[in-house]
Image (cartoon, rainbow, N blue to C red; front, side, top):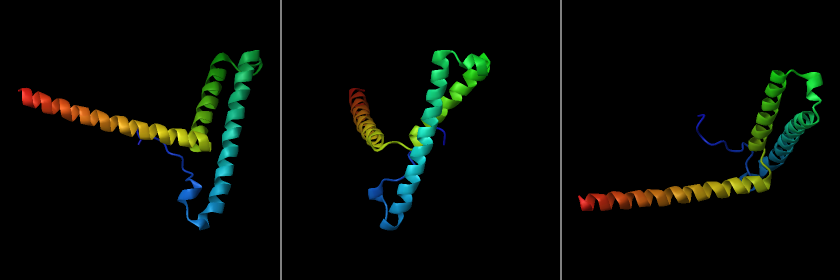
Amino acid sequence: MAHREFECPVPRISELPKTMVQATVRMEAIAFKWRALAERRRDHHIELYKTGRWRHYYTDQQFLTEMRTAIALAQRWASIAPRPEERDAVNNAARERAKDQAKTAELLKAVEFLSAKAA
């Protein structure tokens, strides 16, 4: 399960029955708010680092842990609630990977065929 790609749990509006559209729009808006909060928290920790104010509140190890957590949460919320343009980019990248894998499989078959023919 850890090796599979994460997909956004919020489906596209075009993929939904009409009865679920309103609830999905609300759920997506809530997810965007949580993402914005995680990004603001990450940006706040970056600002603390740049100004050096973190030394007033944390030890070195505590701040490192807080910073890693803030960055990980921002990344996680970015994958949970991608913006529409990010979702399209991910889908396009997945399609390209699938095409590349298909081409690679064809090439491997050709190599196997030629090596079997040569033997």
